[in-house]
Length: 48
Image (cartoon, rainbow, N blue to C red; front, side, top):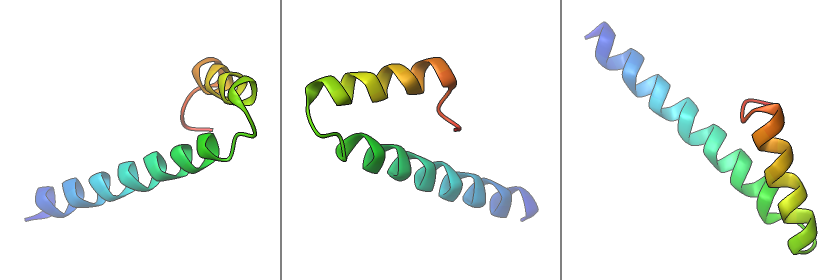
């Protein structure tokens, strides 16, 4: 039961982080800004 709850929490946090990254990328003003943001995420990591 504990493992099930832990997995559900993990999935929830991953989903929230994915949504945060997508919103960050979606707010790009143009393709150059989008590429800059993608590069920044790749270099600095996806957890920032």
